[in-house]
Amino acid sequence: MKILVTGGTGYIGSHTVLSLQEAGHDVVVVDNLANSSEESLRRVAELSGKTAAFHQVDLLDEQALDGVFREHAIDAVIHFAGLKAVGESVKEPLKYYYNNIVGTLNLIRVMDGHNVRRIVFSSSATVYGEHNPIPYVEKMEIGANNPYGRTKEQIEDILSDLGSADDRWHIALLRYFNPVGAHPSGRIGEDPQGIPNNLVPFIAQVAVGRREKLMVFGGDYDTPDGTCLRDYIHVTDLADGHVAALNHVADKAGVFRWNLGSGTGSSVLEVLHSFEKAVGRELPYEITGRRAGDLPAFWADASAALADLGWSTTKTLDEMCQDHWRWQKNNPNGYTA
Image (cartoon, rainbow, N blue to C red; front, side):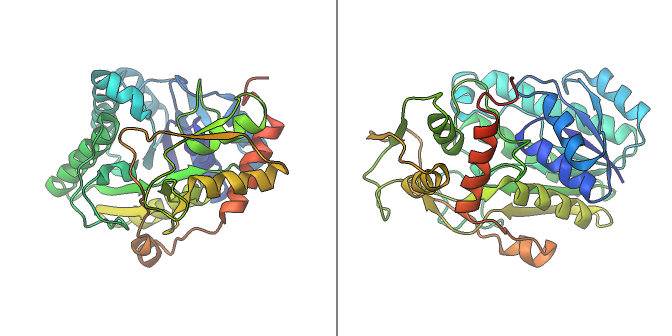
């Protein structure tokens, strides 16, 4: 199939482009490069031996997006493109609602106009909010507690309503947890702009000398070592999950929801110490006060993905940290030379 990947130059997007190509698909990428680099696709081409067609297009530009569909005979879409920083979404909610939701509406309208009705949507575990018990199960009532998460929730609602109204649509909603790691080659990986919002890329920048120390927000939670527990998933496992979901909905109409996670929680200090093993030395850190909005613990029930897709995680936390460190060590400034 010919697959359009929105946000395909980003961290998860680039790894998924590689997985799609390795599975024999042709790939077209659209990305506005607001928070990513086209260099990622050049390196994906090195690894796969295939070149993905690239269009620097913003989903807010419906006319330009329509031009991509006119140029390529697209069979299905994997949709990653969107703003994704929780803290920024709290400060600038209008920016997030406009970009993420209007961009998605434009995409769906253009897809429908070209009779393309297969889509895998990159949702998030943040849709579960604070009120649900752990582990999170797909049948739970969702309710995100920040603007970023609510854009994911509202896009899920839009796609669910569309699938209910029109049985020609094939829709997968993937709620995934904390992606980390990098391709084992060390050629592609996570390259956050500015100060990293997530734990592992921050630790990696401490290890490579770009940050002084890791700040651990809260050491007095009701967890084994007092720090927050999260469900970490290797980015290559996550990419393979998108390909598995695409294969499932290729010939099955309807709306499907799957968690993509390991099903276990790892604490902040466990992740830090695993990364220290990969680096071969201790890394500086300081435990400080709790951060507003942080939950003590959450992880996935990923049994539905195993039952429906035959998918489960394959990489350990140590492997995630080893691969992430290989990427950061080889690319201390990310894709910037």
